[in-house]
Length: 549
Ligand code: CFM
Image (cartoon, rainbow, N blue to C red; front, side, top):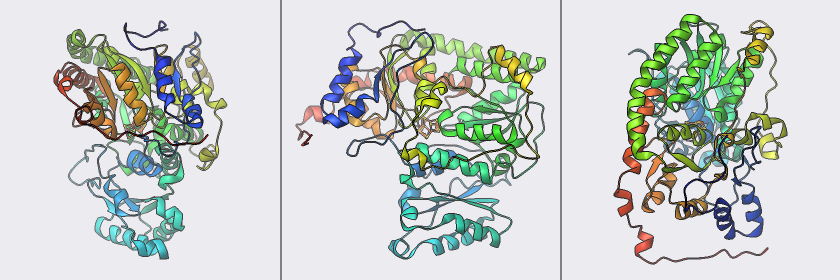
């Protein structure tokens, strides 16, 4: 349990910073935002205050969020190299989703295909918007099959598809009949389908579950076969995790979806464990695979050297094999030698420095581990699109109110598979493990892990980010490309935690070393302090809201 109070003498009181943020809003907006800007308070039993999350952004506010299409096509399916992905929509939706996330892949051999460098789009024009785009989509699929001859095709709907009523699922069925060797499936992931990219995750999970997982009953070799869910190989993270998996003697069946292939997804139901890295984007699939196939899941974190070690220990413990446990311990000990050397050196220069993290739906939590390892504290953090369970822990799931926007996304009813449901551990075994403190299907959330009175802000916007920077002057601010340059112009070092700028990996042991070194360079460079923002040098127009309450 952390002590009360923040943190460095002279820092402004979090409550006054919140007040300053709200001051500028019309009363109704301020009321809503005040439920999304929370002073953390961790109780003995790990209870934390409630956050309003996964709710619509107020129009006019400069949000950091993306859209449902981004969450489905870009995030969950994007990193798979051999599902041919056709975007049904205007060209911009494809172009701006074209590998900017820096998810990497490594085909197994020269024969293996890799469609990731391609951007396939139906390039909808006015004609299709008026007369319908299904014909063009069918033509695009035919053309794509002729050129690439893929195993599988995913069709991704952009906003206009839903608006004009094109039925991508009917097209998929029709084309599958015409090309029986190709698994063709559509995603109704129009950008507006939810309040953020989070809706797209759920839509992607559903379709991958119904149309891909379970298509191939072909287990991979090995005694300790697991799937890693919610790891997308940004900047090579999955490569580093795979390296450790191998050193420990585990058998990775498939990763959803970093460095992955269609066949691995299709046969993922034959593995004996699912570990979940990014809870937000893929908890649905973990749950559904457990219900249908009997594969248990638990949360892991490969960001942070200590967290990585803890996660691999837990995996070894799950399989319960003495040799595996020994090999895992050996691997950890060996890897930690180098980690400790760099960490201790970097910590001398970073101890006591302050970070802010505003990223997606899981990294704002995970990366606090890495900062802590070099003595840095996080004084404010938030997600763009996470839900209450990611903030407060899964124990709040029963109390989450389902609103109309969430109801919009199909909740699949899943029952055990008649022939392939196979509980990997008996009830008694599971119970014995739980009695020993082994947690399944759990995530404790970000807030119980943070200091009291740190500011938790959901769906941070530009105005509030400016106040955070001005009031706290953090030593580093972590977010994405939309925030990057404003932060830097304010004289604060900025690290992109989505794409990692030009760097990575940051996961695993080698990743931790990379991260320590990079943060050291950033927070200890004098360069940013020399920056003079243009708005400090020349006058600008200013305005206030014109509102009626
Ligand atoms: Fe999961 Fe992600 Fe994230 Fe996410 Fe993302 Fe991402 Fe992210 Mo950008 S799946 S929630 S939708 S960890 S793309 S790899 S960095 S916002 S914190």
